[in-house]
Amino acid sequence: MIRSFAQFSRRLCVTGLAFLALSAAAQAQEAGVAELAAAQAAVQRASDADADQYAPDLIQAARDKVSQAQALGESRSGRKQIPLLALQAQADADLARARSAQATAQARLAQEQSEIDRLQKVLAAPPPAPPAPTPLPPQDTLPTLPPAAPGGTP
Picture (cartoon, rainbow, N blue to C red):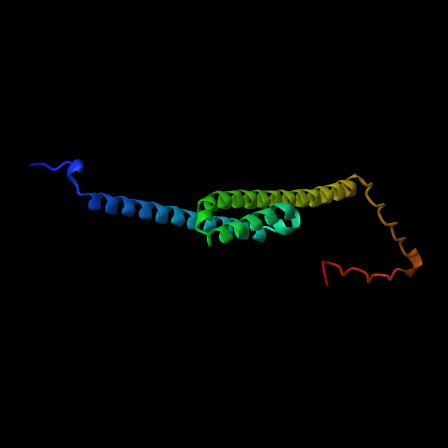
């Protein structure tokens, strides 16, 4: 005879459901940890890209959200919010890194443009006047050459 689910004992059903609930909670916690680690890495990349200088408000918001997510990890009820906060922190950090890269590129562009302007001014300027020719010495101060030997060179 084939047993159906209706014939399983109550204890087996409760044990199975408890196992499923615990494994789901463990997976949710692991997902939060992975997302939190990704957010921390994004904040580090943004800091390495000088986001503190070019996008201080965004990088600080990302750091605050990472800290908030870490604090929520200690409470059981807040663990569900960790993935959302971690994703928000990662987005803020990525935006800060992008703004930092944009500001760096604009500064580099301005520097290159000023160099181009300087070189164009140099090319547009009239060439300097050639130096005045040096006068030849008077004829009587030139040394006399010995007479040439007949038949060729001496």
